[in-house]
Length: 165
Image (cartoon, rainbow, N blue to C red; front, side, top):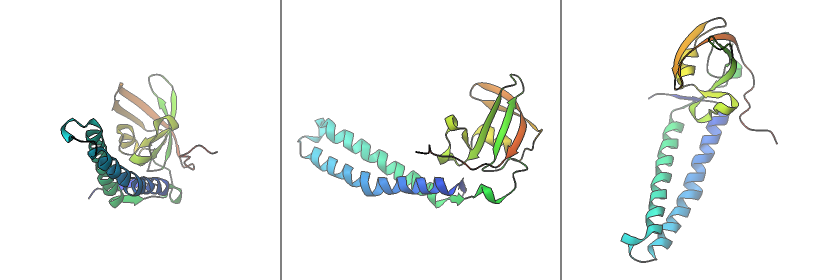
């Protein structure tokens, strides 16, 4: 069974989402289906078919989240050295061709948010970066084409998942 690395934040977020699906959304959709069933002929009942489709989606998400949680490996990246790229490392990269710098933090798949610089450990870039050190170069095939980067720095910084209010 393949472990699913994530931070405690990601585990808690996923667990809360699963709880919402099982305790709130699942019971609501059962009521919607019963209400729609009362509207007559099921063959031509768009409301009923839409509710059943929503139910299938909810059940699939419950199964997916349950599977991920069963394989979760909670990692606290503040507890180890970041002299090379690991889960939870923040990596400053420079595109060798364009000289543009980018900074990414490697997190679990469920926690990723590219706009915030959080990339999934299962992404092509992160897979190529794992184990690299400052000064190393990587070439990776991305959706936009092939790109080469130099690792400018690797370090740990506290991961900000949400906007502070």
